[in-house]
Image (cartoon, rainbow, N blue to C red; front, top):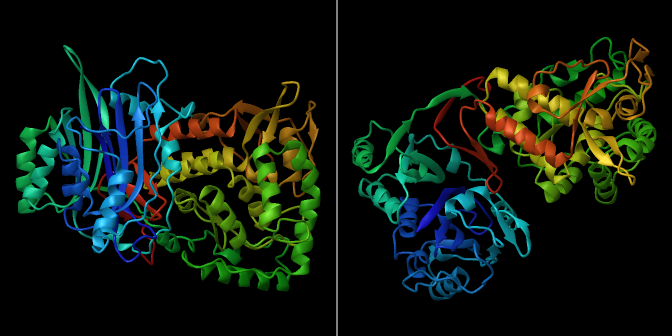
Length: 608
């Protein structure tokens, strides 16, 4: 009995010239155990239909049915709700579901076939719930309440251990202009129901592009009824004859059948390559940021240097290495001045995640006072740590474009540096702010996930919601505080926001001791004094409505219990937004999958 299934496009090193699809299923084996299988297949006509029918149909889940189609087993894990066995599980009729053994055998027998190219990367494990009454399996899965090898774990933990692969450049897989229709089917849970439904897709030759199940509970006069919602993307439009006949046959078989209409939304990138379309939409055309009140406005040499760095950023493409910049002695001197002023303050006021990352980046990225590290080295380091990448940009982007990049775990970063006449002041984000403030924090998994949550929520969002997300970003990623406890158990305020970690005056102002009035130490401020700031518990809903100044210290800072706490609260806030669709980032293909058809009509880039 298949209690959960997801299929979506994938990519990888195993077959780089072929399109493939990843199928993820949870198969019930008994009342107290089930097996999760995840494997990759060549994408061909009706491959999802055929494979899903095999999994969902009783007595069909055998190795002989899968082996001609599978190109890679990604994961196979056995789970038990009563404890501890690691023996291969079998179905009620004795069909062995030990994929590690059966797929290995089938590969050796059929290696000559193109569609059985296989590389064994199977990992097996067991999970148990220790003495806890067992709820229905789909509820246990949905809640993720499991223990793994004696410790708490979730399905996401298991997924994180699956070997990753390099994305292919086959963008046509997710940018196809083929008409698509999205359905929502509600089915009462029973053995074989999914197979009965899917055979009609096969009958009318309608290709399923994506299928995902979600367990729901429906109240009835006699109690709760087990129901699954199936979200299905398929090729074709409701006006097509075969699709129309399919829908007519599906309606009497389902408890509910909805055709999800296309929704018009703001343009957003669907693949990392489309960041090229927005990376050059700077608000002030890069070099034009140098206004008459800028310290470098009268410096012809500085303006020429900025023009060169702007051109370098404008010419960058998503799949090319970041160009290396030969920084001048004057620029390195400015970097060193900022480093010297910040180094002691980091030790006092930076969060522990920042300090750990900075120490690693000194070893691996060339972080030191007399050397400006290269963005390419930092990008490679971050990608190994958290999957984030750096991308050069000529200047400030709109909030929408900048946040859209975060959805792909891409951080847009400037490459220019402030003017040497005032090394401790800048009217704009520069490389000191980006590399000393933002980059180390992106090496922390919780912070990286937190940043991507904001990015995914920004895709296709309304202007009002973009404004709310930008406020959350400002009060967290730029100026966020978190709690840490000293040896005596006393809570201390530590900075994780880049605006604080790259500003000596505001870092001490936000985290240091305060009297009734604190003298400000920053440069470029009109008012030499400012009252101590107000600190509020991190609440994304409140932060999304909290106004903020740009040219002065913040009057209000938001304090999180921890980075993980900040991430969880941000995730709940994003889920509560009236989003036009649910977006999921596929790290293997660097693409975004959404759960309904949309038309990107508003704010389309000029070069799209």
